[in-house]
Length: 446
Image (cartoon, rainbow, N blue to C red):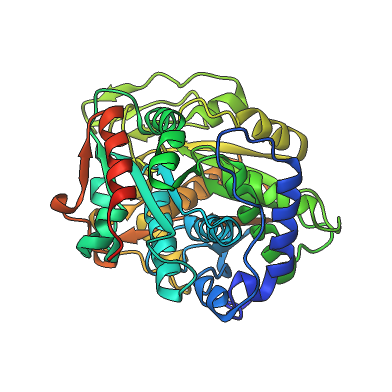
């Protein structure tokens, strides 16, 4: 039995050598030709770097036993300024940008599209770099691009509240109707980077590439091996609410860097009805047809156990964090699951609400405090994951001795202050984003 929360200590104090090893391995296999790629290294150890990474603190907690299955939580949400898994990868990305400026003297402007959480975490990492003295606004800035649906999930901080910092680090909200945030951002970076560098000195770094997250997500496997070793003969699955399953692929990558001492992990995907593509790909199927029941006001289906039995709306978008359609990562996840076991399930808001009280009870002994009223929740990833696990066990889709639930995001209205509309930068297309980049690069530092 592990304690509710194991000993404290951030990733550099516990897994620093392994993280640097993972970065080196990724750097050797990287074939990115999409512009600036800072070195796959971290700055030299220092008190400032240690303070910078202090909020990256993966922890495990017991959740109890359901049926025959022991439930455990890998809490990746310890940073109170983000409450999401994106913190560690964002810290590594910003640290690599800092190292680039140290070695070359070139200032870096990070540019990333996001559904919300990645933008929040990267902005927080940039702010931490300022506050710890690793960098400053003259050498490091960030422009983030999110869809209109993200507005209620955007965390306010000094990067939006301080007028000078906001001018150098704008949060852009893209109006609906044209290109989505990913293709729009890539197009602008590809066509603007060279001119921006020659006119302002700032090098653009488009950080969306999976490889920038792979080495950070490998830390999950390092933490598991050190703090939650798998007993011989015990089967273990890793469950995650996913859009593209970058986190689980990163965990698998981490296992390849460790000595083989246990069975290969199983993976269990949890998705929602707006973007169920990975589950559909895994089972090579189509979404079932739902029938409306006027007596209950719900839509029902009983054909596919991997889909919700009941939903308020077959087209609902439960959590806009998960917005990727037809992810390129599906073939890799399909191969892992079909080879080593696992599975996937799609959940609905109705199912999440039906299990909400049960999930609050499971989390009662952890650091995670779900609001009593689910209407106050603004990030549903953790609730989705636990709903999927409970449903999977109940339906016989997930049959294993242990399940490690990757807690990738959970926050409510009381955890943050949204960025006011007046502090957001509204854009409608590529030309406006291009102008934002030049304005941010040209904003004075004093």
